[in-house]
Amino acid sequence: MTQPSPSAGPTSRPLSLITGASDDIGRELARLMAARGHDLALAARSRDRLESLADDIAATGRPRPLVLVADLADPAAIENLVAGVEAAGAHVEILVNNAGYGLIGPARTLDRRNQLGVADLNIRALTDLTLRLLPGIVAARGRILHVASIGSFLPGPYMAVYYASKAYVLSFGEALSKELESSGVTVTTLCPGPTVTGFQARAGMSAGTMSKMPSMSARAVAEAGYAGMMAGRRVVVPGWRNKLVSILAPLTPRGLLLGAVARMQESRKG
Ligand SMILES: NC(=O)c1ccc[n+]([C@@H]2O[C@H](COP(=O)([O-])OP(=O)(O)OC[C@H]3O[C@@H](n4cnc5c(N)ncnc54)[C@H](OP(=O)(O)O)[C@@H]3O)[C@@H](O)[C@H]2O)c1
View 1 (spheres, helix red, strand yellow):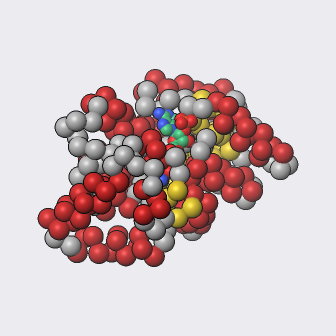
View 2 (cartoon, rainbow, N blue to C red):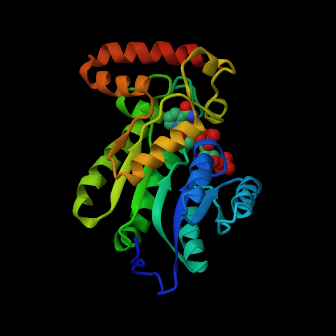
View 3 (tube, rainbow, N blue to C red):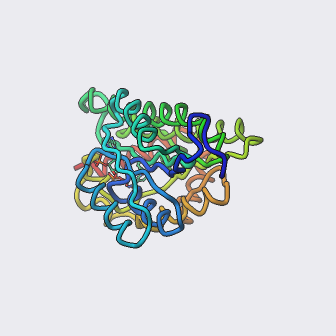
């Protein structure tokens, strides 16, 4: 990871860009990557939380991360974000596409714009950032980490757009990992199961949802994702229960899976 990107100057600063770094899984990835010596760029909508995380990291003696405030569901914001990296005299050698959200409820009654926002962030922004930054990542022989979900392996009644978006992320990530096999770039797709974060509240799940099911901490998920990325693994499913689901789901009749997921999501509705 020493060659600069095609657009990078000889003194360009190599960065690891983490989207959705202001909270939970993304913030934990930022903390542990900074501790492992990566120089970071942090992206999300909440400036105050990004600045405070950047201050915390700088206080540990690491270089202060570049803060990029962006609503990634807005296509214009992606262009500005990439321009912001270049304007800072930097280039991206590791891309962590972590920002994402879901919505619980029937697709026919959930707000249409909000559901399209899930596709804009989880699919469009992730794809756009990856494609824009790929030439530089290839030149740097860098790495990509996509945060998908255990839902990538399942159809998701009552979270239909979310599960479909995460199936896309897994499919896209695996395909890219094959295409980039001989380039020195690794693409890892992390598929967490239930994780205690702000995700459930934004999705509209009931407050007690996480106490009803086995879940992991954002830190444990971030550690598994980081280790898998550095080992160049194609897919990482953290936690033995989630691994079991990822192995059994493709072997289970689709009708049974649909019924099981529908029942689970109905019990989570707020
Ligand atoms: N928690 C789970 O149970 C679980 C399970 C499987 C997969 N995942 C996946 O893990 C990833 C991280 O989620 P999390 O659980 O850590 O959720 P979270 O606590 O809600 O964090 C989501 C992050 O994404 C950022 N974000 C949201 N909308 C954005 C936008 N329009 N533009 C830019 N940034 C945006 C948020 O920052 P701002 O609000 O500051 O923009 C925040 O930093 C997501 O892709 C999620 O789908 C989560």
